[in-house]
Image 1 (cartoon, rainbow, N blue to C red):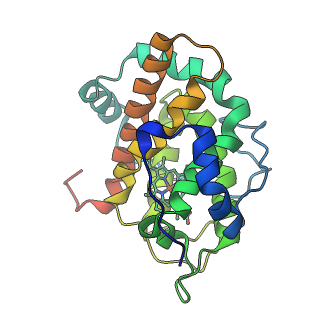
Image 2 (cartoon, rainbow, N blue to C red):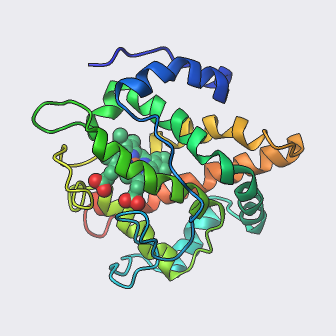
Length: 238
Ligand code: HEM
């Protein structure tokens, strides 16, 4: 079992995070370079299991109108869409470094790395982590330039299913535990967006713009995790 390490979000820059997490990353064999140059909203045959836009995806059980109402409730506006788009160029060549920090956090948090563990031994499954990481890199860019259409909604539905016992492990044939317990999913909005902020600030955007992009990312990640909750919620409750 890995040693838990102390984690101080407000002080966590990419550099300090890497200093803390590098040994852990190496332990679980995650420090691999991933190409993100082909992030797009089309089926991406280069990344196994990435299915955004594929016609084989089931239709989401929530509608475009439901999405609009959710956005209204989150104060998610056109300004946020613009700020997310602005973030894409900033983040595009940093996805690997961002994933080092996010994976470092997961790897150093026993409560979380459990969900990437082999069901039998409890040991983190390096191949599984690596396969998911490639799609996670595409997700960063997809989140930045999402267009919130039906295809986007259907992909959200699929990602929710992949965390849930209905579809977890199937994409990568991973011998892992049955599902990610839902309570951790919206919780991860905070470490994901807190650690993203220094990356948003790295390319010379004004402080005001960095704040706007960060706020938009918080809303978007929370919105997605809410959509991913659907398979976990009793019929009629979503
Ligand atoms: C803000 C919250 C989260 C975000 C943004 C996020 C994002 C993602 C993305 C983009 C994927 C890949 C989907 C795909 O293309 O197949 C994924 C899969 C996965 N995530 Fe999360 N996730 C979150 C929360 C969590 C938490 C709390 C855990 C627990 C450790 C977790 C564990 C997993 C696992 C095990 C998979 C692979 C599922 C499979 O077998 O297909 N995620 N996540």
